[in-house]
Amino acid sequence: MSTHDEHMPGPVDDDPEAAPVTAPPDAAEASAPDAPEQDASADAGQVKRVIEALLFSADRPVSASRLAEISGAGDGRQVRRVVKELQQEYDAGDRAFAIEEIAGGFQLLSRPEFAPWVLQLANRRQQETLSKAALETLAIVSYRQPITRAEIEDIRGVQSGHILRSLVDRRMLKVVGKSEELGRPLLYGTTRHFLEAFGLRSLKDLPQISHAGRRGSPKVSE
Image (tube, rainbow, N blue to C red):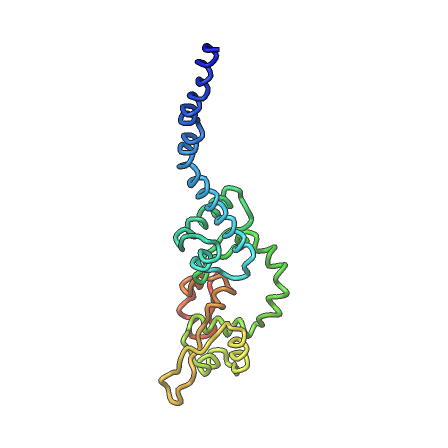
C-alpha cells in the first residue's frame, strides 16, 4: 500500500506543470501580427471593387472625394491609386472601356476606337437632344465666352433667344455675369454639365480652331 501511496501524488503534481507548456497561448501570440495585414488586404480589395462598381453605375463623372466618401477609401489619393490600378488591369485585359478623368471627376467610358458603333446606338438620341442650331450656339459660346446674346446673334445671323433659353434649361449654358456695355446685357458661358456631355476635362480640351474661324461660326478642326 505504501508503494501505491507514493505514486498517487504523481499525477496531481504533474497537472500544475502541464498548463504552462501548452501551445495555444504561444500560437495565438505568433499569429496575432498577421491578422491585421490580412484584414487590410481584404479591405483594400473591397474598396477597389466598390469604386469599380460606382464608376460602372454612374452616368456622369464622380469626384475622387465622393468616391472616397462612399467606398471608405482613406482619401482622394487612395482613390487615384485604385483608379490607376483598375486602368492598368483594363489595359492589360484589352477591355473595350477605360476610366477617363472628365470635368473634375472619373467616369467609365467606352474606348475611342469603338465610337462608330457606340454612336450608331446613340445617334438618334443625340439628334433629338440637341439640334444643329443648339450645337452651333454651344460652339460659339464655348470658344467666345463670356459672350452676350447680341454677339451670338451677330455671329449666327439669326435670333438666338429661344435657343439660349433652351440651353440654359438643359444646364448646358448659364449666365455668368453682365457686360459693361450700355444696358448691361447678360453674359453667357458653358457649365460643368456641358463638359460632362461632351467628355471634356476642361475647356482647354476643346479642339483648336483657326483665327479666321473666330470671326464667324467657329470652324472646329478635325
